[in-house]
Length: 69
Image: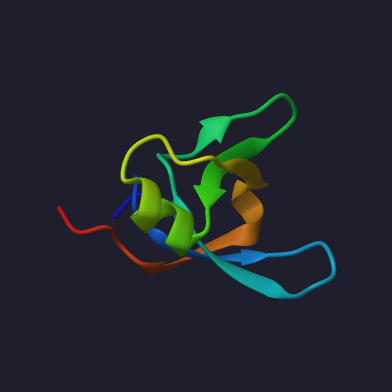
């Protein structure tokens, strides 16, 4: 299954740690590499529509749970 809005992801951070985030949509081509726009699960649940997100390198994400729906 592909990443879509609501997919729970484990995102590797620059220091080698991990952050759990929700995808805002499918991967897309950034300027230099593919990215997935993500936000925290709390932000995703709180806003419902149009949460604030940040681009995360696609190569640094792993699917934890696919979105329901």
